[in-house]
Image (cartoon, rainbow, N blue to C red; front, side):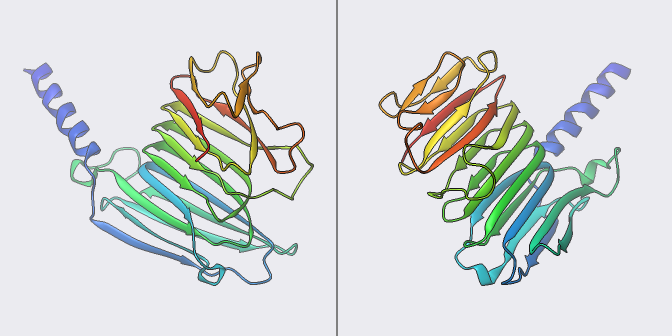
Length: 245
């Protein structure tokens, strides 16, 4: 009887936790000064599907919407520094702490638009969920992602990073349980360092990329190209796919 009760409770908990909830609907709006030269955006999410995409106008600043259960909300923290940089931190919180009520469980969704025409440093961490980063049209300088469970899809912009040293690492893409897909414009020559022990499945166009013995996936013209980016991919339990649309 005890085992049956525990099993029913676990089933109810897991079922409820997997449902998309719409109890909380929170809009996000943050103006960005025209004097700002570098925008850092940090998103810390729980069990939430995330979409980040390039906006249409810089004047709109950062806008978005969070939809989730009644137990979840997004805390917004914005600061500006004397060096004309600004930092926006979006943190999803669970108000009931580590022991939420059954009726408060559920998955959320968050969509964020970031402005074009400003150097962007994007950092994302999440527990679980599908992550789509459509950064076409942005001035992406750095990108760091860490997700415990869920697939990650990234569209890089046709943009040549200007901050930092040429050839410097632009970020680490860490997907503990899930697949990584990168859509890289033809005008961008990329090198993706993938530890040889980190993945068993790498999909790429052999006419565009070489798979090196070290595990790195490198554009054939990477050494001589003007527009290059370097990322590290840690995908121990999934597939890495690189496409050039």
